[in-house]
Image (tube, rainbow, N blue to C red):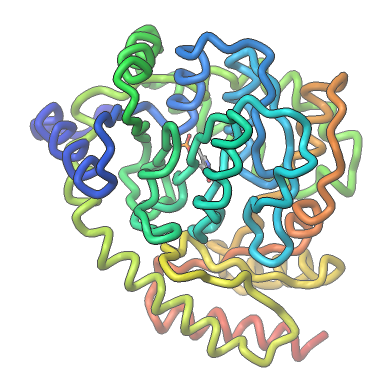
Length: 370
Ligand SMILES: Cc1ncc(COP(=O)(O)O)c(C=O)c1O
């Protein structure tokens, strides 16, 4: 909670300048979190009940932000070859007012193709670069593509200052209106710290079991009511003190993460497991490792028992949560995203060589014991 004292306003200015320099965008708004930027933009557009397409396995908070803004989430399937939205996700999708291509796991989404499709169909593009600061997609920096684009600086992100986000756009009017909307958001508070902690623990436990126990998602509507205040808030100027340095350190961090990912590639090369392809320009958020679904949870629990608690299973399919939150919505099937959600674990890449070697060895120990 407001824990930094250095000149926050100057830091916010500097951080926004760095983001502008990277992306060439005209307007950068620092937001309480990426989801707050999405919510505020949809409100500023004045949209209600508009269909907004998201990958079916993105972060649940994007779903919450769309619902809280009064609009309708549409789950889109991902491309089996890349794990990201592609043209096939969009062709044949119901009509969309906006699509949110997401650089999932720090792997670049095919922004050129998606932008061309969006222009031809008059669909707004909201680029979700929450996990992808420092990434390049089709030769352009993350954050430079969308009608507006979102970054996150929350826990575990590549530029992590424990919270915060940014919204970038070239649209002066939209930037002005979003600023107005955000000005009414509540400030970050001790109460929100407590709620965040509670919700993280509950969601961590719930999403482990929501597909095997179909009664569990029935809790989500009540939980959404209790925790929806976590979608939108403002951070005090003091929050941004560390952000300029975190952004400047980014290229070195991205290089380090690429080296750790290459280490996992090498050590797990002959394992009966797969990773998603890393196109040029990736800025790896975590290393996605795909195990057969019947083996995935055993592998994960084994690794946790061996002390590797940083290994996670993000992101599960959002279908059970959406079905519970919006029971009247018809959601087209999303088999690839569901399959990916059931198969994935993520290995840490913000770690050192020795820890990565130990983790790869632990994975082999598990595989040899099966
Ligand atoms: C892909 C993706 N999009 C959006 C978000 C939301 O970011 P924030 O937590 O800053 O709202 C996250 C956060 O984990 C994410 O992983």
